[in-house]
Length: 115
Image (cartoon, rainbow, N blue to C red; front, side, top):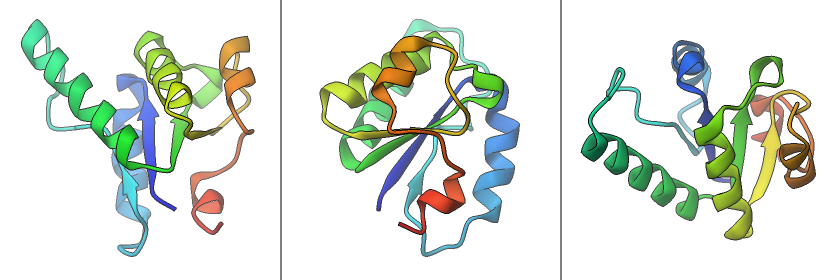
């Protein structure tokens, strides 16, 4: 299963560590960590377009929502993935009703990759 991980920027350091733990044979796409904290609208728009392309290419969206938190951009990405018919999973139970409704449940990423 090819999975793309969505997360608030506040969790990028944790996602970098998670990415380093995954096996090479696993197909997991992550946000662009190279742009530290982009402010200009053109860079932000490009990063969003690139991430939507990753969602398009994946079978599922995995939301890294530590403590139930998603953030505005991740909510939009969840809506995009849902409109595209992607499976959606979360790390933890979601605070937002819309996220709970869209999600197939919460699971550890490593467990999901075993499916």
